[in-house]
Image 1 (spheres, rainbow, N blue to C red):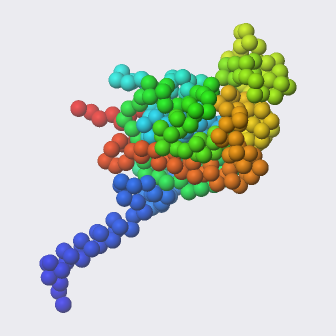
Image 2: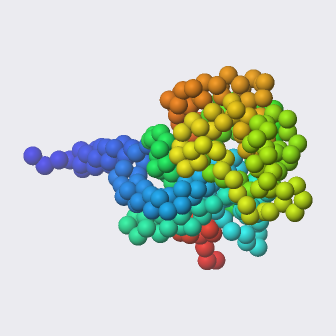
Image 3: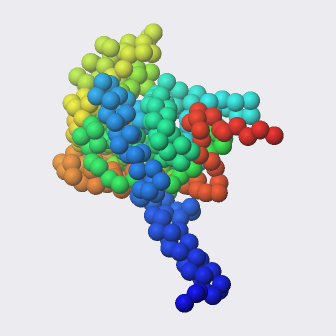
Length: 327
């Protein structure tokens, strides 16, 4: 029997509803399966690129983790940190906390190029930054977790916000807690996420004042760093490992070092200095699983800071600049 026009319309409408509702995420939410159907190759491509660079230069894994952190703290995780300067705004790359310390831009470019070759115009640079950070942690021996995706890319950057929002290597505990609280993150999140310093390096100017002036520091540790970084004519290019025991492996060595007063940065040792966060440091130093659990939760919460979702923002064609729209 032939269907009436009204019945046909109802079936079409129902079919359309089922197709849309079968998508893992709506346009206004983040979801772990956001690219499951529209770009399933994102994850193997990103993992392959990150694995290649990290196997050759493990410190780049720390750079990619830092890139994600420094992006999210400035107006949310929107890839604003990737934008180069333009005639209308100054980018965040030259902000004090980023200049010379954030690395991995070219890795994001490589992932974006390969992903767009199979899924053009689908995956945002902001999501790639998060996936690359997660993969860096995993490939260096750390915990794995499902990342929520669906972010879009910002159309501008904010250097002054980067200068003010990001914590400094010289920050004390109260400043660290307040900076993280401003992003909706707790003191526990702050301590756990600081554990990301179990990988990576820092330059002499960031820790010279600590090794000469701080009192909550192991004397032999301070002396060793003084020999490498003289107080006058301090070399700007010399780097030291943030974790003096297992610098290329994502473990809880960072917290074990703090118990021994061997935190490299003033902001590191501030977490264990007769303060409210001492108990957390002890817990993470003794229990790697507890650290991993809280680190993952912190990364998930940080990834949800002010998400830029459709119809806001865009999917950049080039992660270093906004899309060109001819008049």
